[in-house]
Amino acid sequence: DVFGLFGEHVFVVLKTVPSFMKAASCAWALNCLLLFAHEVYAHVPPCGLFLKFVSIKGIVFFTFWQGFIIWCCERTGAFERGLHYIQAKSHAEGLDDTWWNVAQLKSGVNDFLLCFEVLFFSIL
Image (cartoon, rainbow, N blue to C red; front, side, top):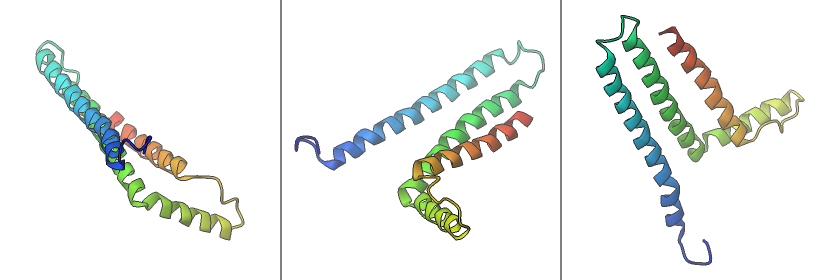
């Protein structure tokens, strides 16, 4: 609450609006990519244009929704529970249990999943 002028719901809305703007910009980019592919399809020699399009679309699509799912997991406390599990196992093994915080765990899961996505789509 800034100077008693705004309630907490205003800040929730202000945090949500950029997420919807990002979703709309991703949808617009995919639409433009589809229009571009449709226009140049007849002029490009057969080099797997459709598979390249599917790869780009898939990476953008899965990366966006992966980020959304990770955000939902963070909001529901799944990462907090995972962090407690990791700390308990580390402590039981006599290891330093202060390696990660929730933000680092969230980033690590996102990076790990992104490696598999890129590997999968690079095969296409």
